[in-house]
Amino acid sequence: MREVVEKEKWLQLKMENICSIPGIGFITAICIISETNGFNLIRNKKQMGSYAGLDPMKKESGTSVKSKERISFKGNRNLRKAMHFPALVAIRRESEYKQLFVRLVQKHGIKMKAAVAVQ
Image 1: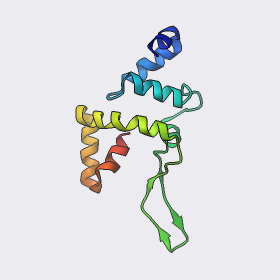
Image 2: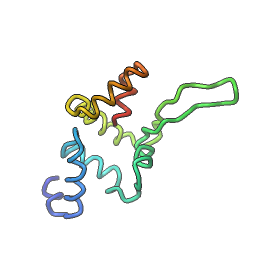
Image 3: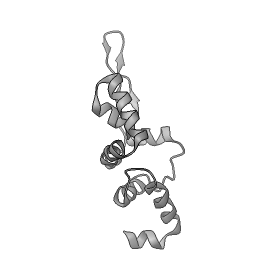
Image 4: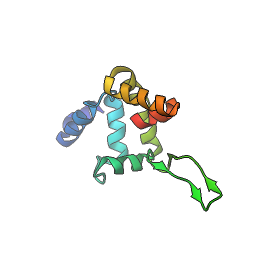
């Protein structure tokens, strides 16, 4: 994989940008680029979250069925899996993400919900 990345200049630039994000290494960056087709169709972070299935979704049906917001899970499962462990590493190592995590846990009391927000 490293040989392929070194041969392609555009791929090398994308890898450098993605690997600059705390918690993301070479393998995760390759997975992200391959699952998003090199970000060809993704224009903003909201679209990226939706594509990964990390966007919040309300479930409502008339007046009788109202539930809490949850992530939609309708997106790319492999991309969600690839982002899980880098988010945990970022929470442990980077103060910005740790503060976000702690703030959300204090607000909601649910650690997994806060970890998904970091993803």
